[in-house]
Image (cartoon, rainbow, N blue to C red):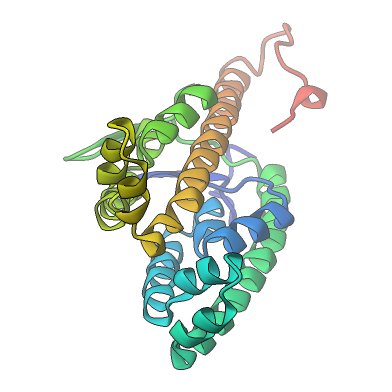
Length: 260
C-alpha cells in the first residue's frame, strides 16, 4: 500500500498548528465533554475551528442569558430569583445550541471511528517531520502525565507541550480572562490572609463556574493527545523499519502485534 498513490483517508497530518489525526474514541465520552462545555467534544475530534466557535457561543449565550447565576440561585434554593434573572430570549437559543452540539459531536465521533478503521486498513505512511518558515512540527514520544500536570497548573500549557499551538494560546488567553473576571486571584489572597467573608464576597460566580469545566477539559485533552502522539510515533517507526527492511529475513514486527 505504501508504494501506491496516497490513500483517500490518511491517518494523520502535520500542519503549522500541530498534529491532526484520526483516532478511535468513545462517542459517549465525546458527548460528555460536549455537555460539560459545548465545543470541547469537537476539539477532542480535532475539529478545532468549529470547537472554537462553539466555545465562544457558550460563553456569549450563557452570559447574555445569565445561565450560571441562575444555576447558583437554584442550588441555593432561591428559585424565584433564578427565574427572575434569566433572559428567556437568550436561554431558548442556548438550550437549542446545547443539545444540537451534543448530538453533532456524538454523531461525528461515530463516523470518525469508521473513518479510522478504513484509514488503518489503507495504512498510508505517516509524516514524521514538517519544517515551516515559522515553526517545526514533528511526532515524538510524550508523557501523558506531564501533559496533564501542565494543564492542571495552567490550562493551555499541556496543549503547548503537545505542539497544539493555536489551541494552547486560545486556552491560555481565556484562562486569564476567567481568572480576572471571576476575581479568583483576589479571593485567594483574602483567603490566605484569613479574610474568609471578603474572600467569598469578592467572587463573581458567573465566570467562576466556567473554570472547573475548562480546567478538566484541558487536562483530559492534553492527556489523551499525548497518548495519541505516542501511538503515532510507534506506528511511524514501525512503517519506516518495515519498508526499509522488508526484504530482510529477520522479522522485527508482525501484523498481529499492531494495536494502533
